[in-house]
Length: 165
Image 1 (tube, helix red, strand yellow):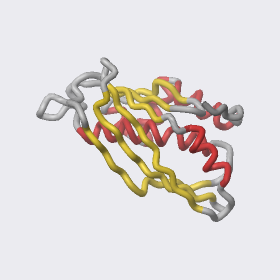
Image 2 (spheres, rainbow, N blue to C red):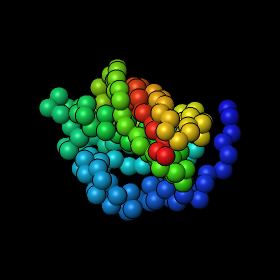
Image 3 (cartoon, rainbow, N blue to C red):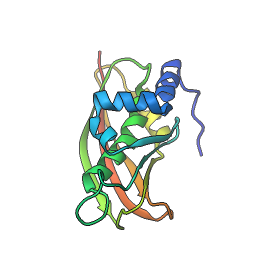
């Protein structure tokens, strides 16, 4: 397991905001209202990993009594996107964009689901190596597990990063 250098002051500030339930809720209301509608929660965020939970209840449910695939995708994407934002915090001007998305569903999601992305070290390394004008991509894996610890889905989300001049 590799150790990361300490987070920058900007990254620590971002981490603190995302882990504060009120600030997270307000930020999501302004930037990503479906996260509020589905009651996504930021459970953990550091330089190694990000955990996001989604409850099983009427707003996230489909007619088949499981969590709607788009709600699962939103939680998975947030677990990777928040880690990306943490890696970019305080490192200058970047653009980031999802350029590919793939999902594998393996079990019915009918309880609270916890999505985990654990590629922080790889992501931070990629961001730190980008020079102005350069673009690079990284596919991040977010795994969703139910309360029993059983895997229900895997999401492969490819992010493109460009360091602006």
